Image (cartoon, rainbow, N blue to C red; front, side, top):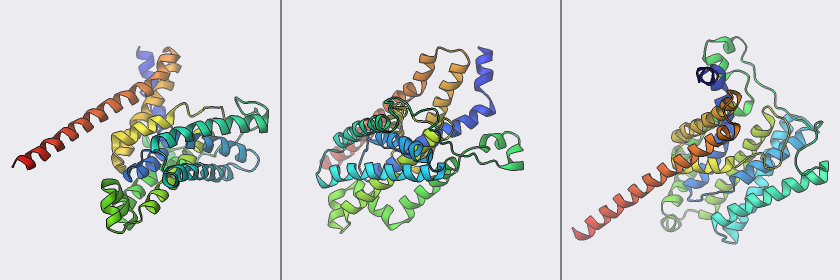
Length: 314
């Protein structure tokens, strides 16, 4: 037991937590933006999946940075399909999200087969790994240095996007309109806000960030693509969005918790704990978070109902 704890409670583990948090955080910021506009996009897993595949496929024949741009573009294209289905053809957001996930699974398997003759994984010579940023002397600072040293630029981008997300939501005209649409869409329409445009932008930004999340997932260390390699992380992101209610700082905190759970699963497996049990760790925490979020929502609804009844009877 002490040996397992010694492997888990290390500075190296904290560095892994940061790396594991990055794809969850990128997707959660994008999904949180659309959630603020009252769109719960459960197609995040599919958006991440096409980003991961495209990043590897393009990056392996050009360079990793072009691969990242291609991953972003792939996320945007699939998000565009989701936006057309849900906003133009008025498909249910949940149904459109399920369709997005299924479409992503089908497309990636098809492209694996067409391009590489293998429906499961890219060949060994198809690799694309993002370079790590070495902080130099700053990386030698005790505790803090090793945690932040040798990460891809997407890790730093994800952390930078948290204050940007806050600024957009609370200090820009678009953020005001987005929150107004999410809180009361009929009132927003009456106020002259272009609801379609506001929601469309949030979905496209979500797709872009999920594409980057997929690129980080595939290109940060492995450098290859495996069918279904997101392993349901998109649903973990949905849980983080629901729990944080689209707020920037809680989003960061919740994503760090889920990233820590993912890193803990890896460390437990290395420490000799049953691998199946270790892999269940992040998903068990996800279920617990959803239960807590549901209880909070039920409590809020009950409080709102009591206030409404009190006003009626007063």
